[in-house]
Image (cartoon, rainbow, N blue to C red; front, top):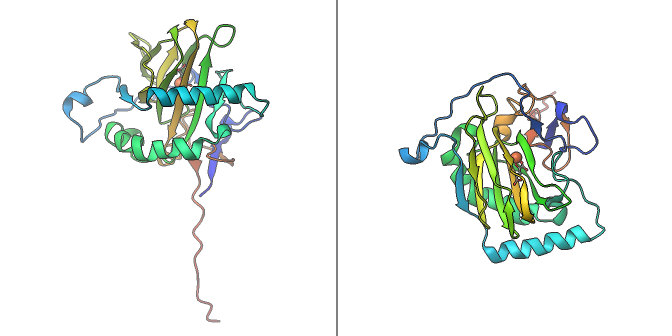
Length: 260
Ligand SMILES: O=C(O)CCC(=O)C(=O)O
Ligand SMILES: [Fe+2]
């Protein structure tokens, strides 16, 4: 099964680049999310945003060094997404298969299967992973948006900075989705897990530099039915790598016994 991109998201060069939609864009489409199999206290968190330890501080430092080497090199570089101008795509560093896939399969999926069974948490089969960078004279904040992902993990890597907190509203389809947003501070090595359809953004950076690893987690079983960005049945075109995480079942090849 090869990976595919929904045609409506491919309006420009660079497949997978049009992965953001800013709010508001789509008709209301309320959905009820009721995860089962977890203690009631965990289920009650209305916004269903979780903080979890992901990377050690020394690993974050080593990764930052590697990212800076890459940034300073003259290797060809793509933009992490259509809203962030600065950062690195992890597959360009060769870290997708070595780092992100095992992280998704072994560490995240057992958790997301319990926390978000209604959002494909048990069926993650691809991702788009990148690091976003905020610094004086570069990007400083990120507008409110939702992700081209069923679920998103956002891990703070450092460095030293002030400001830049994340804020979260409700699902983008909800009428009052941005009422009373929840502010979440960054802690190096810790990840924030949230639903991709949840409105969020980043407050302006005060001082210093902020680098965060963002993994858009995708479940083809969910998005093949309904594209999370255009909210329609996806109209697919072939793409490279994971594409935008859609798949198309190839018609089965049936062996027949030729008797004639
Ligand atoms: O600035 C951040 O850490 C948030 C990034 C984000 O929301 C995204 O890339 O989808
Ligand atoms: Fe995002």
